[in-house]
Length: 404
Ligand SMILES: [Ca+2]
Image (cartoon, rainbow, N blue to C red; front, side):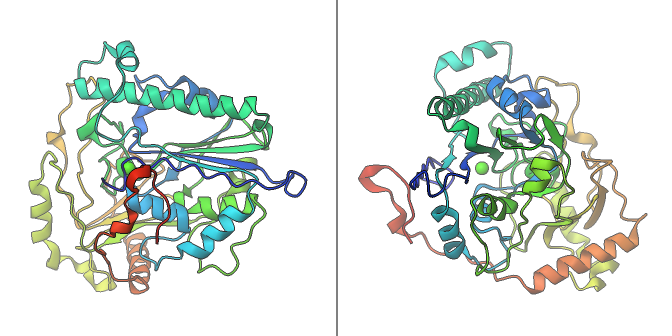
């Protein structure tokens, strides 16, 4: 069973009400492989009335980033640190749990493949011709209902008025399994926006500004310091965090303290899933040594991406690079994708679809971001793929939990 499968962890830590009355309850709902175009408020054909209503009264995060895969996103959520850093899981988790009146982490299996859902959720989507998309839509509806049920339970128990609910995907949608990130480029497993720009929002009566949309830069590693701060805890004593406390950004609309975001550096990147135009990756590898920007110190054949304010720089092969058409739209084909370069620069604020590559126009920006990548790389830990640990097997209880 993969790490992505069947992770439903509910942790309830209660303390006497008088002791911690002022600290909010925190509910964190993490969806799996939920794509950018798969939520109602992004004009999807899939209906998500509960998610739409909850987020409409909260703050929708429209410049919010996750990692392109399950495990790295979850790791950064738990540690507040980029995955190139040594792990600092234990000290931060201690702070995370001790100060909470209620902390509920609902890491849903939905809407990750396999595509399975009771028929009653699929029936309203008979208008969707693609059978995988239709099943996927049913799974989204079931998840939407589940989030509605969680919220209703909190209201009925009298907890809602003091609750902060975060909803986030863990990575972009997988187009091979019914997901869609339209109109963003790429998909899960890639460093294009389709892989990493995440659906996310916060709903809470405690928000100072409700019913707003945030375009401030926020990353999944920011939740740890943000939630620890809300819980009255401290991140002092942990290893240095890459995440920022962004509560004032979300709640009051302040500018984000985050000016830069390392999406990833992975010299061993590989995505074996079929992608239209896969030959481009091979072509890209052949032009590697001739790139003059290799002088920056950073090996630009390495799969990497970094964001700084409006700029995003990608190096190496970023992953499946096509613009998958809007579901139901068969008129566009991925054949008109331009050639990739080893170093690519995009103005993400003006060009979130990554259609206009501008590295030649902004060489100073390119040089600066390559230096930043080199700086991160110098401090990175070597990639380590430890052997499977049989102690993690949930055994007869069927419930996953900490084991190390
Ligand atoms: Ca995932």
